[in-house]
Every structure is written in C-alpha cells, then in structure tokens.
Image (cartoon, rainbow, N blue to C red; front, side, top):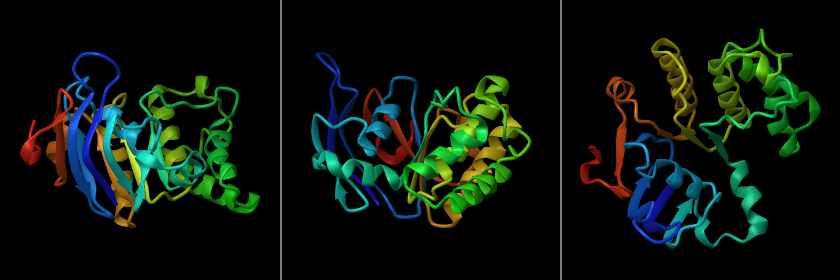
Length: 221
C-alpha cells in the first residue's frame, strides 16, 4: 500500500529532513512512526499525501508514484487518504458538524449521505453533544477528536495521523487509539506518528523509528 525507495528530502543546506529512507507498509497494516521532535516524522507524512515532494527517491501509494503524480491527479490521491494534523486545521467559522461534513462535500457525496456519515462518525467519537459548537467553544481534546472525525468520515483507504493523542490525557488517548484500531480492523491502512512510548508499548504493532531523518534498522529508537 505504501512504499518508499531511497527517499531524501532537503529544505536547504545542512542535514536533510529525511535521508535515504526505504520502507514498505502492507495494505491494512497499522504501524507507528516514532522518533524525537525533528526526526522527520511529519515530513514523511507530508510526502505521502503529496503536500511535499521528495528531493530524490520514489514514493508509491496505492500503486501510484506520488513523486511524479501529475497535479491533476493529486486531488484523486488525497481523497483516498485521511489526515489528522497536529494543529487540527479546523475551520473557525464552521460548527463541529459543518467541519466534518465539509470533507464529504468535497468528494461530492449526496446531501443525505453527507449527513448520515457525519452523524455516524461524530457519535463514534462521542461528539454528538457538540454538533453546533464552533471550534473556539470546545476543548483542545474535543478539537482533536473533531479533526479525527473529519479524517475518518470519508472512509479512507489510508489514515495518516500526526500525534493524534498529543493533547489528550492517557485515558482519552487510549479511547482515540481504540477508535483508530476499529477503523483499521475494517481494512484501512494506518500510520500513526507519535513520540508517546507508553502508548506504543501498549500496542502490539510494528514500529518504524526515525533518528535525525534516518530510518533505524529493526524499528527501534
């Protein structure tokens, strides 16, 4: 489902953000991407959904060469990928319901299906009591869950999550990971970037470890 072949990403002189990274994530797999701040986790995720392009190397996502994908095909790629950003990127003038439903509008679902999917995912994430609130009216943890709901509402083939539990207490973190595990159990390929070692220890999942842009052998930081 995801393959990287000798991928390097530079932003200027000095050490690259990613250096000669090769990896393979199987369809339906759940993997953790870990490493210290600045190790290259976010850069790797951005490369996968073509927010950036590699300086060198090849990236294949669902049989498409992302590095050379024509601009007209980029929206098609992104419709298959749900992304949870560290900074949420919620629309401040839209309610919780509207923020999540907007993702379904973008791909052109019929209005009835938009509403059905939006209600369903918000209920799954225990947000049905916040439907008509704006982002500034809810807590950071609730904003995090709205961002996750938006990433999941279109039932993506791939879910990329950048520190999805970073602002949550331990109990809520486990609840969020349980939701992501449930999504994974239905066939969605999941890559979760995190530096939360306790969370990783609780999960029997493969770990890809980055250190200063280099993928460590054996997946151990």
